Length: 211
Image 1 (tube, rainbow, N blue to C red):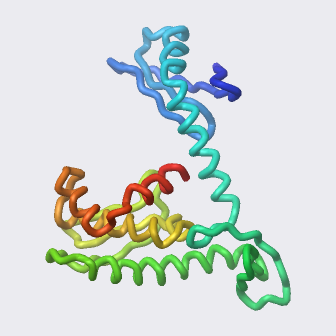
Image 2 (tube, rainbow, N blue to C red):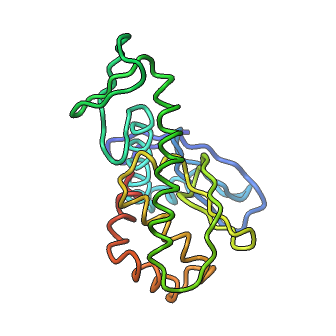
Image 3 (tube, helix red, strand yellow):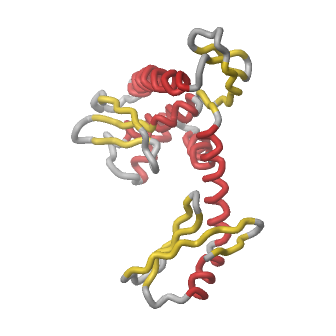
C-alpha cells in the first residue's frame, strides 16, 4: 500500500494484531501501522492523513539524520573528505579533512569520542553543587537515545553519534544524564536541575531533535 502526503509518496506497512487502538510509526522505509484485524484500509488512510503534518516532519528529520550518517561531521562541523595517500593519519584544513583512507575516519571519531566525552563529563560534573557519584562512562551506538543513566551502577552511557555534534549538545546530554542521579524521572524538579546547570538546554534539544 502507498499513500501520498504533500509531495512525498510513502510505503505503508500494516501489521494486524489484537490491538484496541491503532499505532503509527515513521521509519526510513515508510509508515508502519499496527492495528486490529477489523480495521479497514480506508480507516487506515484516514488515520494517516489525520497525522499528515507529524508524519512529514518525522520523515524530514529521518532524511537529515540519514544524510548526516553518510557525510563526515565532527563537533558540529561538516567536512569534505579528501583521500590523500601522502597523509599519515588525518589533517583538517578549513572545511576539508585529508585522510589516507576512509576507514581511519571511524577510528579517529571513536578515539575522539572517548577523549572528549570523558573530558566533558569531568567539566560538567564539577558544575554540580549537589552531591552525586562520579559515573563510569560507556560509549556506544544507541538507536533512539542520546544518553542513558544507570543510577544503581553509577554509570552513564553516551551515544557515539554525539561526537558529530558541538560541545554545547554534548554537554547538554551529559548534564541531562547527571541530573538523573538527583531525580530519576523527568519531573519539574528534574528540569529545574537541568536548567540550573544548562540554562540554554532547549537550544541543544532543538538541534538534537532536528537532526
